[in-house]
Image (cartoon, rainbow, N blue to C red; front, side, top):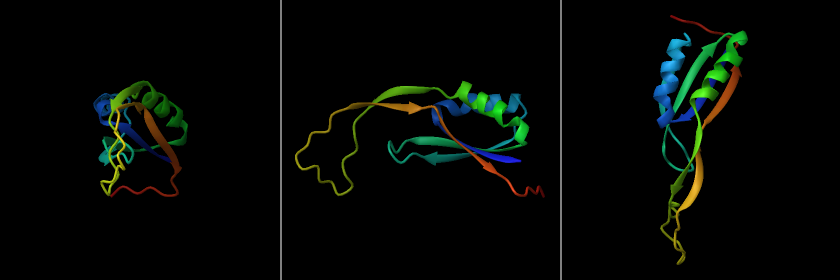
Length: 109
């Protein structure tokens, strides 16, 4: 058995959740926050049998696209920018960061 942790952008979470339900994958959905952009993410915890992992990864890949977004860098935490002007930059967001972990034991009470 495997535990799949999929961290995705909030914009993709509804579509992925619907697809997981339709494909009969059971998931726990949690709100999370990214460290770089400090933007909302959604983390899905999905338990599945080993033989279903590739189908699950294909499903995640097809519903979580990366895209570019223009953002203004956040000033340093101490508020000291040393006279630098913060210019908007283009960054790639979205897609999915996925971890596949072995599960030694699973219990459902």
